[in-house]
Amino acid sequence: MTGDGTYQEAVAAGMLPSEESHRALLQSIVDVARAIFGAKASSIFLLDHDTDELVFEAVSGEGAGDLIGMRIPSGTGIAGWVLVTSQPIVIDDLSQDPRFSRDAAERTGYVPTSLMAVPLVNQETSLGVLQVLDRAKDRNVALGAIDLLILFANQASIGLDLLQTARRARAVAERGDGPEAVVARLAALLERSEDDAAALRLLESLETVLTRLVE
Amino acid sequence: MSERVIPAWSLTADAAGSIAIPAEWPERVTRDWAIADATGEGVSVCILDSGVDGDHPLVGGISSAVAVSIDGEEVVIVPDDLGDVCGHGTACAGIVRSLAPACTIHSVRVLGEGNTGSADMIVGGLRHAIEQRYDVVNLSLSTTKRKFAEMLHDLADSAYFGGTVLVASAHNMPVESYPWRFSSVISVGSHEGTDSWEWFANPNPPVEFFARGVDLDVAWYGGSTINATGNSFAAPHIAGLSTLVLSKHPSLTPFQLKSILYLTAANTGGGP
Image (cartoon, rainbow over the protein chains, first blue to last red):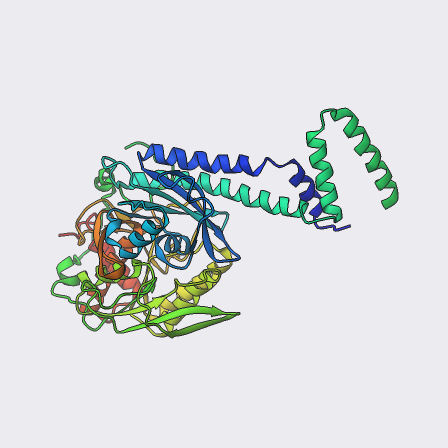
């Protein structure tokens, strides 16, 4: 027995909503952020701790479709600074930043003029960055706008945390032929079974046998 | 004003008139006494950030630059010729320079390739800055990692008693972060005004002061200038003002300096 909750995690993995469901949550956050600020685009970056890169996880508006999965170094540039320093920032004439303009042009051909960026933090862990690009000109940079974006960032952080937890749990299930994977697959089968009662009876019988074995 | 959903750690334009603080003292400390004719000469200011482009015309040269990195468990500090990897540190240095033109500026870069040790880099960079006994350290950054809070708290106290003024930007994130919350640090949020010489004392801490942080033209990456907003630009305003006070009154302790900033704030009757 693992005794570390791995089986429970594996069972959870079998019952988790799909990757698509979590992506839909993040997508709705960037869609709404874009709508509220009347912006041309909004995006969520996720920090990949293994490679120290920021990965585009959700994009609304300009660049949508092409950018998902694209990676940028996390140690430089504006998004990297926001991530590391946990400080929100608004910049209104980005075209003056020669590197930002060049990188944006190379990635999408779309060079934004303005940017609002806030860190995504859940509990105490930096998860990524939420950006809103080219908000409507009549929406000034009043402090209330930043407060609003921070509220949104909190929602995005929770979504991102769920996504990462689900990915870790799924990784347990997909790890191969180990007992955790078997448990996870059983849980997934149970979730998909059309005859819940029969499937449950079968698993209860299995549980009875296993309990006697342990005792 | 409608009720705000999250704490008011910044000062909106319509709220500026509502935080007048009565400050009766037998003899008034005036802003003239505090900073008139001060230039920042003789005061060293450290910018703990993304590096500083010393060649930027709005920065006008820096006196030293080091980069902090993590090698295993070790904090490594080496001379830095990379300049600024983002633009933000240059912006902060430019703001300090605009207020205190004769100060010396020192860059400690804590952002670079490999962020996994970022909080370690911030702690290591701050320790270095305090050991160098810089007079003022600008920290337009924070960390949410609780395990670093105690270390940062001890460092902030060391700075406070050792005569180094730490100025840190606050933020409204729904998680706690450090070091700006510590009372040994001068914490700064933004007001919505356009006067770089206007600051307010906050009667409702933990944010202690509000300074200009909205709609600013600041020095940036690659010699450029951009328009920016954020509490991280408010902090260097208070750092610059602190530099002026210290250049005119070099024997002040961080405690006394904070009191002078309080007494000369726009809403305590000490403003112009």
